[in-house]
Picture 1: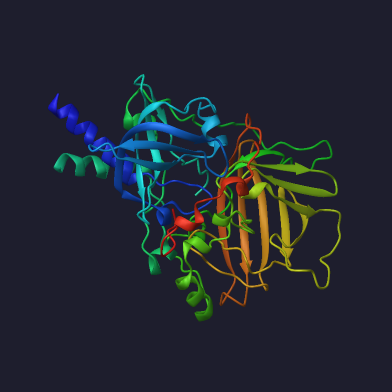
Picture 2: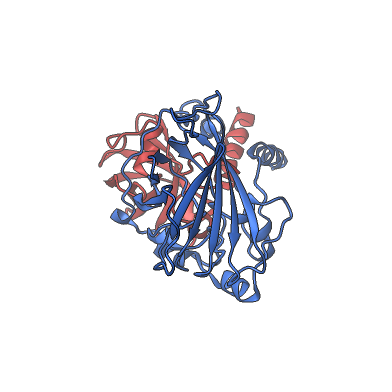
Length: 133
Length: 268
């Protein structure tokens, strides 16, 4: 079990560090792949918009203070082509999200995986197939 | 930790990391690639749909013209124009162009601000080629939902075209290859995330060759004495998306990224 835990931890680390994201902007200029983040919170708002879908979650700390975080997803088109719908994530959902933190220190991150309260995980990454070299 | 490092090494190998010769000269950025996220994180996550590959001979229209129509993805630089050059090749920038290149910041990339990619840059979204006897259109899903038009009716370039994001394009068929000659560019777009510049003297010649049903190769000659000491050629291979349709993508709708971009341009 411990080995499995290590493997999962390594896998998560790899996911954060090795994945580039192709979008209309440079991923490396906006997010730090070496700074993974995992937060649990309540979805406050979902924006099914271009160039990126976004959601905002309210995260409560040990003292009860609530901080709102903005998570960037792929474009709705990329998400749709990978099985998402605009209903996949709803306001009020309790979720756990993993991603990469913004470089500028704001409460912004790029979402990689989202785990719903039901335990179902959904792929959230922004990278599309980049055919050709 | 050692196990992590081993896994990391395996992952890097499996990613098939792209070479980044020119950006590596001046700006530090990680290599690109892609990974099957579902495999990396466990079976509970929906698998990213693999693009369908189609096989078959190069198709032709009734009059014998090569048929280039359909939805495609790829076909130009995204992160670094050097990715379309042989490994180790150096982009022959003039000192003035190199100064601009080194000073550029990602927040100023026109594409990040929902402005067009220009030529030969491509956005990482599907696009469609539409052929008529007189015009060829490139319809872009990303790249702010814009289009290129290529005149294949035998006309010449205007003597003094207004500088534009896509320039003035005329084309002709050479066997199974569409040859596109473009002048009249503005100097506003970047060639890539890395920030390679150009001037209004830019002249491109693109050769689109459909090598089989599912594959296209485009070679582009880039001539710009205002920014490069000699012409150079880039080459990209890209693939058809037979079951895709273009979808709406209005980049200006909710663009909030550019103000968060920090520092030197990365290529990813």
